[in-house]
Image (cartoon, rainbow, N blue to C red):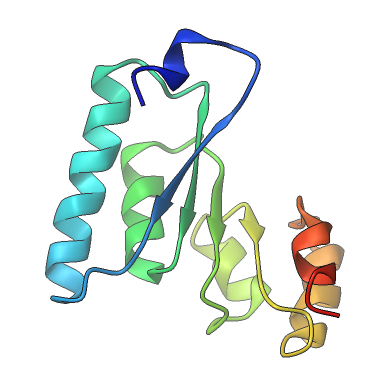
Length: 118
């Protein structure tokens, strides 16, 4: 993270996965990660992608303006947008409806991810 923040041309993607030990640990690690980004003053270069729904909500609470993508695919684009997610990364074969709805909500940034599996 420190090395990546020394440049200003490339966005850094901080991926937050679900901890095997559960949601409580996931949220603790999420808080630590966001705190680290803030302590290094990296908010302008860091975007978050989350597999855990609650983790993304915590990121939104700690950093109201940061881009956050949800990757798990277990909620609708409408639900994700309502709690503060700014984009989605769902697999198109399983989530064609979500893809179309996400397009309607202007939440797609990386359409090539969807197209990889087709």
